Length: 246
Image 1: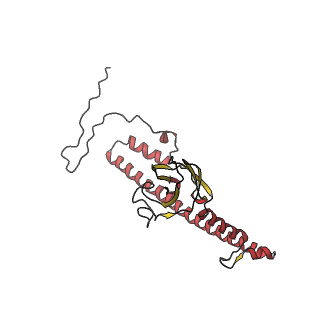
Image 2: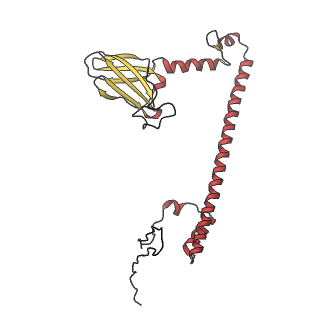
Image 3: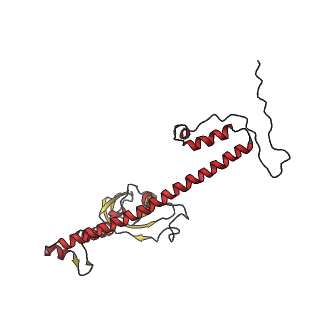
C-alpha cells in the first residue's frame, strides 16, 4: 500500500469573529527538555498530560486543561504556605538565638569576680559593656572602619613625583548599579565621604595607599586619567576614588 504524503492545510478558523489564531506549523513536537525527561512528574500531572494528548473531543480536552490549571493553583498555594511558614519559623529561630546570646552575656557578666576584668568592662566615656569581649569588639570595629591599616592599594602613576593622595568613597553610585535600582533614599548613590589613608612612596612612579580594613576587596583600581584612579567594589556596591595631587 502506497503511503500518501502529508498535505498541509491552512486550518485558520473561518467565520469566527475576534480571533487571531493562526495554525501554520505542521511539524511534530519531537524535542523533550532534559528537565522533563530526567525530572520527577507526579501521577496527577501524568494523568492530565495523558488526557490532553489522547482525548478525542474538544470539550474533554478543555476540561483537562481547566483541571490542570486548578491543580497548578493548588500546588502554588501549598508551596506559598510552606514558604511563609518557613519564614516565620526562621524569624522565631533568629529571635531565640538573639535571646540566648543575651542570656549568655548576662551569665558571663554575673560570673566574673576578677575586679580588674570588671573594671575593664566599664568606660567613663563609652558607658558599660556586658562583657570584656563586647568592649574589645567595639574598638575592633572602630579600628577596622577608621584607622588606615589593613588594606593596601598599589598605584603605579609614573608622574615622576611624590603626589598627595586623597581617598573618597560612596556606595550604590552610577557604574556600580543601574540608575533607579538603588535602595530607597539612595537615588544616584550615597554622599561622597573621605577615607583616612596613609601613603608610602616606593619611588617617584609608584605609591602604596593604606586604608581601613573595612574597605578590603579583591578588585583593583582602574586609571581614569593621570591624576585619578577608580576602584569599583561590585560585591559591596562601593566606589573608591584616589585623587593624586602634585
